Length: 143
Image (cartoon, helix red, strand yellow):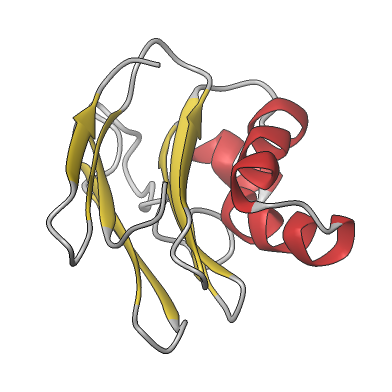
């Protein structure tokens, strides 16, 4: 599926990835953090490279248990496996969710410089949506 932008929602997390007609990717992630979090704990998903990342290959936004996202540097890892393993976007997302997301529940959305859209998660469901400039729209929760 090709398109732009897509966004993801989980309680208190909102992410968006987009690509323009020139192939420039962007990603943004906002979070209120965990409910009942320890005093002094900062947000996690918005950390560049861990939960949000964009480069000339793709844009990625993550949601879920921040410690697992940080340990796996999930967002940057998607771009890295595309660059170094030569994987397509959905293959890279699947690889990262399976191989780099250790203990913890999380998910991510991504868009490539060519407009390919992908998502992956290792939990029951993840709210997400996609819209393209030609009017295509799709929303989902479960696989």
